[in-house]
Image (cartoon, rainbow, N blue to C red):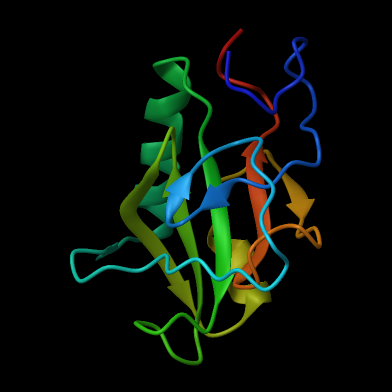
Length: 134
């Protein structure tokens, strides 16, 4: 089981997800910490591809997530959602606004708002409401 998820798989606790560009559920960071989420090898994907990646992760009984960032250095003025399984991937959705980006995310997700302990560039996190580990 992934740390940070309740044993019943229905909810997530308040611990942040990142440290030094690495997904680490359960580690607290200073509030001014920034995570550089982008990379030259990022692949901008379509909403259809996002839904496929997400469904495949669920079928493998993984816990997929989408981490939303704003104004990343490689995406100035944009909002991105990075696909995450056990670590961040190179697959990103890119939009001009948060509303537009939310419409691009796969269906049946549950949002977790940014907490004060999360890195400054994290806007919100989206997890599958079905929980693929069951």
